Length: 318
View 1 (tube, rainbow, N blue to C red):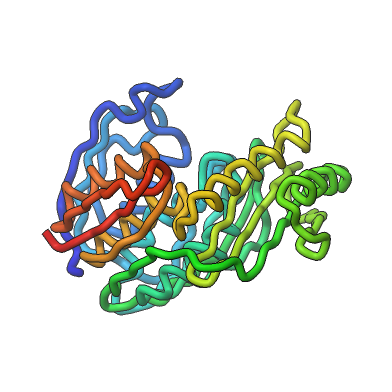
View 2 (spheres, rainbow, N blue to C red):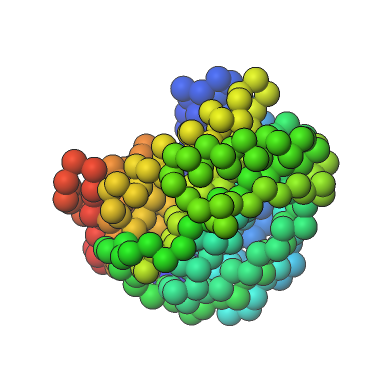
């Protein structure tokens, strides 16, 4: 797919959020996109509620982007990746900020779920976590190496297939290990997972305290990774129940694509021009993604309600 080079303006950014407007991680993402796309930008500042972006040529090479807070650097990576993954030359990115955030895909999700699917479509994304970063301190660091492809191949994920493997990893940084052990005890009892599938990990590389619970299921045709994060005043058992509940919904629906992967996969299929997958009822992020893609890409998205809990998403060339 050739770049569109389409200039755009966004208004009323995060109008219903408190506070409204761009936050630090959004500004970092905009500036990163501007650097990669050699773009002229107005409004790239914290609190801005309007933004104009006029791209020129895409640059490849070595980049370094730092959020400066615990804001998600994985979202910054996903902002610039679509431009870099279809160029002639590879790129290397060093990103600093939050790597394990409640409102963004954690590093492990990108490495274990997103990157393998991207490789099936052509481009390869190699990820290395040098230091985890949790809210509120941040300070995480990851390295991403992008090996591009001339185009994205279509992808279909309509069946999940039988379960091949399960794994639960509870990570604590500068916190007592019993927090991780209590989370895993809930997973063992609620999901009936064997002790050999459970791992409590003490990672002292982070600059501040943090806790993440990662539940991963590998099936014949797909992989899902659900995450939940410890917060001050929230019991470890409640963190585990939250993650287990989300995973149970995916398992019961018998779909290959989870709720959070759906909106990320939509963009890849829209760029490819065709593909299909089955997932849970679409989130607001996914429906927004469909609307945005329609403004820039000549692809058509058709939604079919297979059952109350299953939606088939099909992308065709417009």
